[in-house]
Image (cartoon, helix red, strand yellow):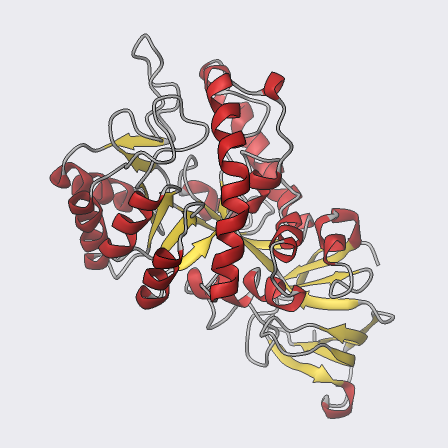
Length: 405
């Protein structure tokens, strides 16, 4: 049955100005028939359902391009060893549900869950965002995704895969692709939360990164997402031809120039940068690194925004709380991005990164009707999108998944 949403303010995700007194028409197949001014909308069809939005704002469903659904901020690696995998499965399903209700209709999980969650969502067995997965993160021995404990036990075998040569990196890429990965995730630098390294340390070498990029290209051009925080690793990753830089806290002007030349995306995960620092809640090495990098990260990401590096929204949810994904929009705006551009980063730009922009990411005729309805004007107060209670309606392919109207 066709559904007509009227008396809306439309923010269509393309970066175009908002449209007052807009109408969104969705057909029986979950496709958009019209998204624009009421004056140009087709007349209501017999039997169509009409929903009066009362001046509320309708936007495309949002994306989170960097999440870890297997993680929570409260649970460390050692605790995961004692976890019941059956309970873990249901907890991940609940996180998917909560994330969808927070206004995120598509998620890219960058390590820690198998592709079966994607299948379960596609089959309608569980409720949640559309899902792309990396399955595991490829790292070198002692690198960011090496979760070995002092006694030699791997605390997170579901999360990381070790590769120490170009051939091993290629084999690791083949392994995650065999396991159903939509994207290959690798580490080009150390990280904040890993005990064995530092963000300035290099991860996989240029040759190893090139092997992964080449292998992904041989598999229908699969994208490569790279954990890269320090400058040397970012440079190696960009030279190797990766699709996206994840975090990118060391983005200098030279690296911005290189990213622009390579058409690479930056997913800055500012939610981790703006998270309050509590030395009692994290290991000393983590607190020390976060303290040193906080100001540097904000300065460099602000510069990347100013330079026009393509940015897609990603939060590192799991390192920070789930279902608060759209707080990331506020942080982008705080660092200089226009609110309309921030919304585009979370919709059409993110869809471009995930190669879904032919059918998702904007509210345009012929596209799939993934959309949200919010209370208030997010262009005047972008922070309201970060509060799930303001997300009144969520739809995927025209099917309403949440309705508080």
